[in-house]
Image (cartoon, rainbow, N blue to C red):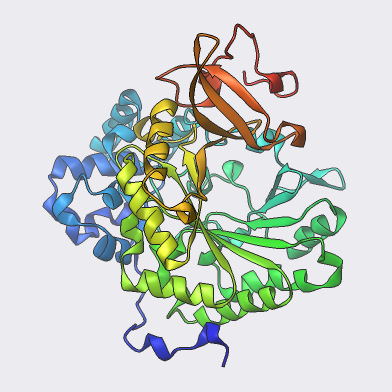
Length: 446
């Protein structure tokens, strides 16, 4: 028997029915009854603008309801009033209070979403590739070696994160969504672009798909014509929001066999797992899911953003990284919250982000220091804040490209004026009297 599907250690794990709540069922969540009615109404207001979806596992197993509203997982999944600008909140609240018809609510929600930068970093304008001179909406090709694939069957998640930079995928507006449902278009693009080495399957969350859909996209990649595709990455939060996907769902074993076949065919399979807090690693089912995935030969790499109200604390990151290492998960990235959606609620100044990263790194061993960051996935590329320094009497922020639209930018250091309030790359100004950063000749920030 394949070790990946050995069920001998699963005798105490009973299958669990997946039950999910959206903003239409907010008042059906029993645990929310402990909150004041005014707070529950505020949640409804925000949930009519930003996407909301949470499942029973997250509610019952991850949230400490004695700590609400300060519990980090509660903040991670439940909408808060301050996630909208005051004027936007009041406009939507007024509609709901007078029981406006659904079309009015939908129209206002669409207007308000347009002010939230639904596709940051040039995703719509710069990243969408073409086949036969026609855009392929379900692919993004920003960096030479890596293409992102958004399968149409994976355009939801088991629960939604309130900070999500891809929130526009979930609000029902086709004009804001990336998705591709044709395996042949994906395979043709991969065949025609030999410079590619990595395929990143993302969403939404690809792990909401039935295994046979995922298999339809990935199994063909074991053929010789795709030998240039060396790494298959799958971005998911299922390991934390629905670990039963890997343990006791009806097609869990089939999923693990698929991962194992890809590994045996010589592909590096990387599960790009989204973790925001050490609490997500504490439940027995989450740890069993990690064990089963690792038994396939796939590598789990952990990434997530630094978020005010959730994990803006060095001790929390250090504990999470230590736990990940102990469980065989590789810390990979600490991201900066992107300039989209509810970012004003979550954003942390870049200087403070670097201080948190540094202080957390100082608490872990070398195996925990594989996480890069704090990293901004900005328009020109992934930019890492490397620290604060004094150069020729000027206090500066040192930065570098981890990845860039132009590969020549990678690992090239550059410097910005010290700024304790800036939260994103376009708020920084070049140091030493320069008018522009070196890359702006090709990719202006403005």
